[in-house]
Amino acid sequence: MSVLRESARQFFTLFDAKQFAAAGDLMQPEATIWLPNTREVFRGRDKYIHFNEAYPGHWRFTIEKMYESGQTVITAARVFSADNPQCFHVTVFMTFKDGLIADMSEYWGNDEEPPDWRLAEQLSERY
Image (cartoon, rainbow, N blue to C red; front, side):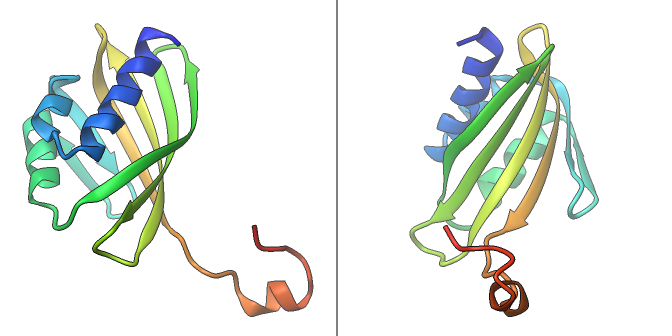
């Protein structure tokens, strides 16, 4: 596994353990983090780390896929909580500079049931 992929994996492992400050050590101090779903940008790792420390509940992360292209690592993960029935999937693009995360975009999606019409027309199947 490459150094960048290992850093991305470590980032998710630390988030899973709620060790946000340690995860922040894997980021450039001036990192920019984008959340396009809510049209938010966090300028600086400290704001992003504080946001995650303040977020309610203990959310767990399971990496499902990881790809690397140049200085960017793309990770798809399942996000879930024992205290909350909601479950999500997130796709994260991490771009590294000098071995640390310099830019990150998180694309979030809710896990939900497919529309009845697609199942009724047998266009898809559940897995």
